[in-house]
Length: 312
Ligand SMILES: Cc1cc2nc3c(=O)[nH]c(=O)nc-3n(C[C@H](O)[C@H](O)[C@H](O)COP(=O)(O)O)c2cc1C
Image 1 (tube, rainbow, N blue to C red):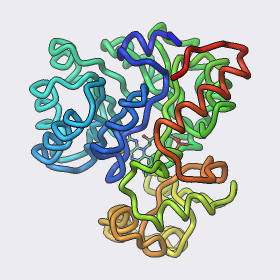
Image 2 (image 1 turned 180 degrees about the vertical axis):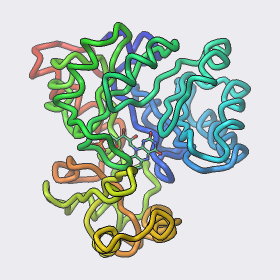
Image 3 (image 1 turned 30 degrees about the vertical axis):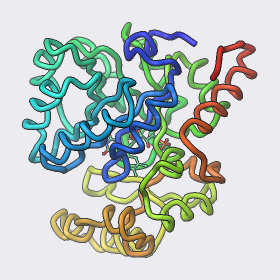
Image 4 (image 1 turned 90 degrees about the vertical axis):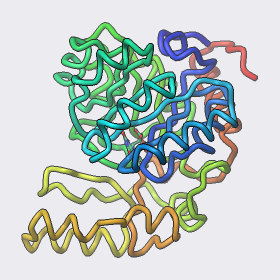
């Protein structure tokens, strides 16, 4: 099945695995790319050599294209931005900052540039500065979020820019994918469902917390600091929200969450750690391989859109 995004990234299917701090390492990214989607390694706050190593390990597992998600607030962002040009990754997605200074360098290296945006204004600005596509991410999604829902954001971004739009946030099956395509997207990006993939290295407790989650079990913390994050409700979110209500400072709140995602992902502490996941967690009911997830999505979406895609 061809869209401008499959052409741009040279992939079989328009399904992208979102870059996720601690979660999106080489085995997950490679498995998604190997299954015909597009995998991303999440650079988050990792030092440049760690990310370089992840890229090389992914390349050992797949000859298919994959990319890197660069968190621009990271103290290592500049070095990583340079390093990806040396390692020749297929695409870069960016979040938490302004990628404009790096865009010419990436384009010259033949890297596709795909910023993650949460508003029409930012999508237009990224297009103007040479982005090849944008991920329009609605606030249903796991992790750092904007204010507008996927349902409202995607068609408005699709109308505002000429470059292809990738929809993210709250997409968990073929129905979500079909809906996103109807809204004007040319691919989907999923995070929460891929956290639970068999190839995901996330601790079993984290996966079970998502599998057991209901529709109403996610919580947004950090609204008072201007850095809202969606994760599953637990002791950590309760404590954080209590401190926010009591007027805790940004520093106090930051200190509280220092290393808390790692604690949940690596140690399986799903009470005191941060279990980032989106509202669609309630729909994710089992662990499957990335290939199974992708095939299932394509056959469901294909049936709904009455398209006979050549799957497999
Ligand atoms: C555990 C987790 C960590 C994430 N970390 C990042 C990140 O480091 N950078 C980023 O751009 N997006 C991050 N995201 C967002 C995903 O890339 C993706 O856009 C989002 O999960 C899509 O929404 P969904 O969770 O409803 O599928 C994260 C999401 C999750 C669930």
